Image 1 (cartoon, rainbow, N blue to C red):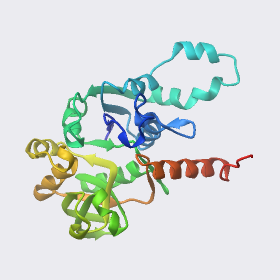
Image 2 (cartoon, one colour):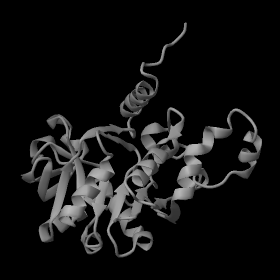
Image 3 (cartoon, helix red, strand yellow):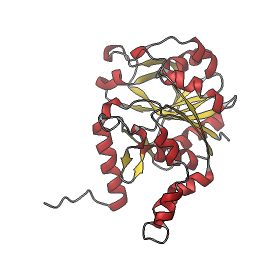
Length: 280
């Protein structure tokens, strides 16, 4: 079993300024729970218990969230709000958390390379917390892990997007080897719409093997002047098997305002059975 899951949480979250000037975007709440907690819960439900973060100097709130708060516990003791922290307490007792910092923002490829000090020489999961995912019968990481047990190679999660939006994503191309499983020939980061080889967009869930590290050493700065993880996986696919999983479920881009609002409404509807009623 793969036990380690790497969270890339060093970004500034500029699309949500000024809210993210002092608060990490991963701590923005969907209802009453921050985005990053949804991601950690997904990893734990898939069987991963060693949670690793590549963070930054402005992200201390994430570390604090997954730590004891003795003053708050004492304040809530004996009150009706005493059980409000049960979910996060359960996570804290079921996981080990470790952190390393990305001192300069140089892209997700650079972040994964830094994370090697935490993940070591074994396969590991990767989560981008602002991609909020809900599986149909099992969560998205669990779907990837089930495929890893069969194929023992690096795996990316993909979903179909409208062709006119392919320039916003890493795009996968290859050949289908079974239903919803693509053998990847190439990955292109944010191609022009006219140049996109498919409409299969890579989303923020991965299983990576240690063979990714030599490829991370080979890549040059790409889109936005950053080291793109997509470019390294593309190199890996030229040498070893990489597959893409067209997962079953929903994904919300909570790095965008539209996606964040849609995710909030979806979660509210799932919990309460109706959308919020606004009294005038």
